[in-house]
Image (cartoon, rainbow, N blue to C red; front, side, top):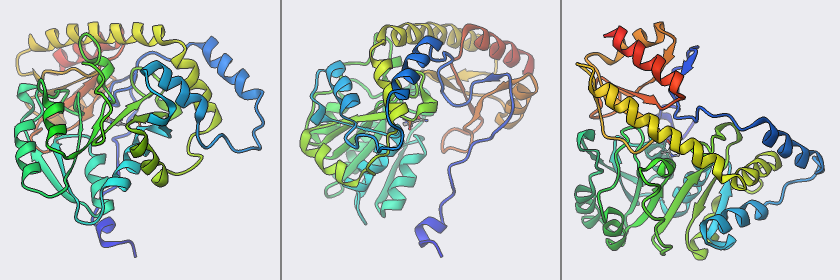
Length: 347
Ligand code: PMP
């Protein structure tokens, strides 16, 4: 018998469908260049595969630290930011710990809180303004002892961001803030300043989105050396394999490639948003991410109608406050055109 908290949960799922134009998982439309793949594999071929990797992932952590102006002691690298989110929740959330988070948000947060036995305190908000509900979160934080807060900005699946000074206000509340920055590279004008290290902040980043390496499963977190030491006690050792580590290190050495891809995604996002706003019956929400959530007259019918036109999007209509909403990732210009054409036809 599983624990009752687990028995009551549902597993992470995805509507797996075949489609030529795959815009359902906020992936990058740009594959890693063949010559860099070959460089990475050549590096890995020179390593013995019978020996465990460096469990400290020091080479990658040093490369990240130098790119971020930090030291390796402020960085943990892991098997996707999912793994590090789980380790951080395991570090800071125990039975009964109050955990405040906006909803709708990344569904994993609520699962991790439930597994840890924390007290989930969702703050439901409407995505129309494009802003996360900081005032409401602060009110819930103030009503609880030693709270933890989990949020991402830009938020998945709505695309909205924290209002100005939102992070400072959350940090000043004294709550432990787990701040997921999976989509921060797509903010207009670049990430709005990396937050300075402080004892109640842990920031999570990923190679899956802007770097376009979702298949490799690499993420990192940034925090004070003390927090990193604590989270490292919970994180599984050896979770990052030598292939992923080598490729992520090479990706960091080729940041101009990532920057060019991000610039193209931001430009396409502007174009797609404008086109969607001109389509009667479609209401896209403001977004700073590599995806757009939008309201339709009937989400299920629209999902199937787009799929019949070879375009796969994400049905997010089961989330609170997202009735009849879908989410489309920003793809290449050709993919985005295919989506827009399908959307117009489907209506
Ligand atoms: N945070 C958010 C908000 C996400 O949307 C995702 C991926 N869907 C992740 C974290 C997980 O990223 P990773 O691939 O690094 O595990």
